[in-house]
Amino acid sequence: MSAYALTDYLETYRRAAPTALRDAVADAVLALAQAAVAVAGEIASGSLSEAFAETPGTQNAGGDKQAGLDIYADEHFLTAAGRAPIAVYASEERDHPVVLDDKAPLVLAIDPLDGSSNIDVNVSIGTIFSLLPVADDPSRDLLSSVLQPGSAQVAAGFFIYGPQLALALTLGEGTDVFTYSPRFGAFVHTRQRVQVAQRTSEFSINASNRRHWDDAIRHYVDDCLKGADGPQGRDFNMRWIASLVAEAFRILTRGGVFLYPGDGRKGYASGRLRLVYEANPMAMLIEQAGGLATDTKNPILDIVPTDLHQRTPLVFGSRAEVRQITHYHIDLDPEGVRSPLFGTRGLFRS
Image 1 (cartoon, helix red, strand yellow):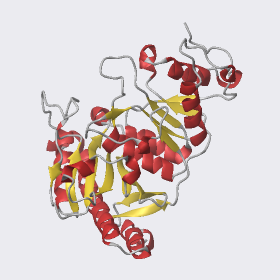
Image 2 (image 1 turned 180 degrees about the vertical axis):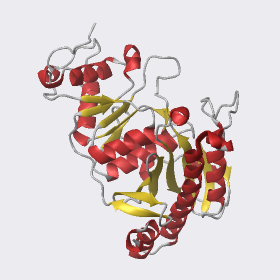
Image 3 (image 1 turned 45 degrees about the horizontal axis):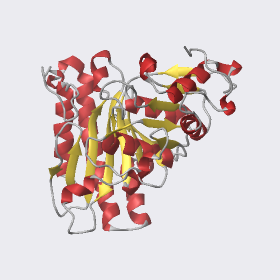
Image 4 (image 1 turned 90 degrees about the vertical axis):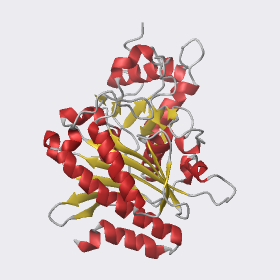
């Protein structure tokens, strides 16, 4: 058991190329893992926990409604970050980043409780995190280290609070999965160097927003729905959980593609997911597992953020399918007519 524990995995990571930064990353991941176990305990208690208490009228920095558990998780991970070598704590639940230790080498960007709209229906929710190095340039404001492209991340991951408590983690050397064992009181290494299936017959999107999508997204989904009779040449299943960690864990497990595009609704032109603490860590995890992540056209990890709570469209998952979605956007002419590459119009075209 001990040979496969998260602690031993991180010790191997430290020893492989000893540096102060790698030590800091390992210490930070361990602190977050300890906090996640405590948060999972509160979630498992359900309405018996005081953390589930309603907080009427409260909103987070992005304008989303806050549940009591959102606030509890944020405070718990902030406390954990204060015990780790983390200089800045940047959270979805706070308007501005919090400076913890100006001598520490890492920035933590975090969504403390992803999918909180699912709390009351007992669907898997989670915590998403990104670790970035503090900028080397001493003339830069410490808080500016938060606004680095995703390619600068030194680690990323998420905890998923579901039938099992699990951690999907990348330290830039592949993506691994750890499952928490209450019996041993430790995260155990259960899947090594995960690989996302390169093709898929499963897509995930909120189809209720179809009337607001751009033509490229509509054409792509229509062609999936045509199944074996359409240009895709195979039947598809559709999934939508409204929990980013649950969608990502499924894709890491059996492949698939997730789409949260921008659309025509007010405030949704750039989608609703946040670049710094949702899209970037997910993109790193998926790409380290052989998949791809884009904003429908451009690699997520290349985007330089300008604001902590900046939103972005997000597509990630099986490499071939993500590339195909990009082609749908590039090869669609301004009148909404597809290139011959994509055959006839889809099922639901009006």
